[in-house]
Image (cartoon, rainbow over all chains, first blue to last red; front, side, top):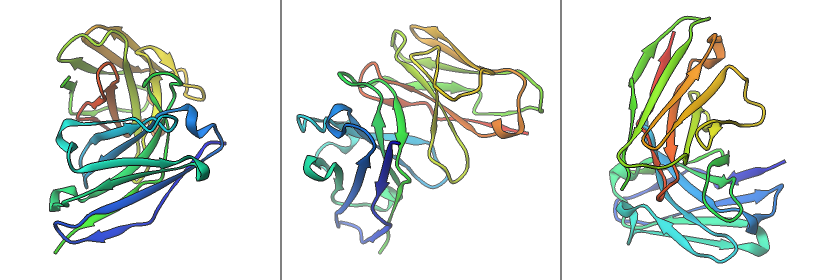
Amino acid sequence: QVQLVQSGAEVKKPGASVKVSCKASGYTFTGYYMHWVRQAPGQGLEWVGWINPDSGSTKFAQKFQGRVTMTRDTSITTAYMELSRLRSDDTALYYCAKDGGKTMVREIDYWGQGTLVTVSS
Amino acid sequence: DIQMTQSPSSLSASVGDRVTITCRASQSISSYLNWYQQKPGKAPNLLIYAASNLQSGVPSRFSGSGSGTDFTLTITSLQPEDFATYYCQQSYISITFGQGTRLEI
């Protein structure tokens, strides 16, 4: 069965960086896009970006460009999201999420459990 | 960026009711529209993909329709477990979510 297991909660100071990992299993890791989506406390879902685990290509939401990096290690079927220059409004639950499309982005069919990132001085 | 606007933002209903949630895109997105359900403290769950296709394992009381800019999610005969927040999401250009619709008892 498909599983996405994320790293644990993080507390960071403003201006710092955070790197979240997502260990995938139960499917062909390089066959499907991986998204990162965040949800601030009590708020809606916000797409951060995706990575193609096969090619390593990425696409980010405009508001995160320049601050976010997405990478992957195919040998251990793990995706990573790093967000830099953290601000208090980056405090959120960050999800990794598998896309259902093989050759194009379509819909998100599996989600990780979420990683809470708290930014506080 | 494509903006997705859901209405209503919140909705009160009773068990057994039929409810409809609408989602409007700021430009045509063909049928690249998905619906998710999220319960408190849980990750979202895919209900409908490509506007009208029921995800495997999702009860048939959920249905989706629409194309272009206007879409609907319909739940017939509401069950207690359906009270949750619902999001639409477009994948035509990048990804954008609607702001959510909270369905309350």
